[in-house]
Length: 407
Figure 1: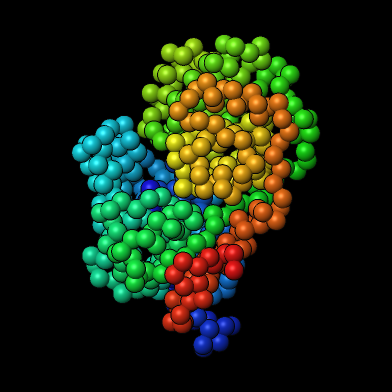
Figure 2: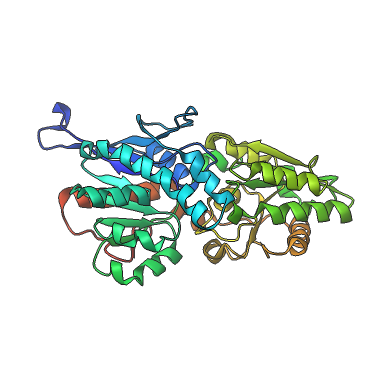
């Protein structure tokens, strides 16, 4: 998981008066720009929407000793520490002890490198368990917040007990953390929905494929996959479904894969072995600001993951008003948007059949009111509520197990 910490330095200015404090917020994230990960998207949004005059942001992220960093559209000063994040990605090619070592060593390098920045800030907001663990080991007394994006491994649970807040972007994770004995007293656990950059994805004008009830009679159906190329993303099943569709249907089904990762070569080999390599384009990563055009140029977005704590890509597809098919593994997203079609992530035949069903039906349109909780204006204010409560020392209105963005 990418690492992020949000930190703040006190700066008093004459224009603000002697009692007005400006806090510098630094986001600690192990890497930004690899393939549109959830943490990277979140940090980019936090920086882009930093409008409260009490806070300004810095990003403390990683650089590889062998590759230049790619920070994309970060609207904030960037500080770096050395990390071997490509080694961490390689951990997904293995299992057992080898995988564990390859995953943990880069985090160790990063957290050793960033500790020099801890005293720079008034509030540390880490989006990484590695940084949270280092804060505990260093005995840092600075108020600290952690954003959690996925399940917390057991070995890290005690590391977060010294934190002031844990922000969750998943109600399911919130329930699971609330049941842990280690976290009964501290920290405060709050739910803040993932933010979506609506201006990036909302279609300027309705495309012809959106207006039509069915696109099943089209000569070419353009499928889209977005995400890191890791095992749980389950691109393999989608590739098999593409083979089935092109073997049994007269239409031509193409697939664009946006994102990269350690399994790219293996997946390209699979596409070749299935005889669909000419139909599958591995397009690499794109800055978030370009993704609206990518969604708009495809007919159907497929999210075949075995598991997602939420699904940023699915949310973006809804905002972009694209046809969308998700797997049954997206339990939280399905709970929020029950009308979105669902497929079995373990069955290429079911995935292919459900793709045919989706292209034969109208686009699922979600009411703007149901999407409003993901608007960055609301999400940002919920973060500011957390930061402000840490600065003034008052008990926060969003105490344990309360939603901050949906009060």
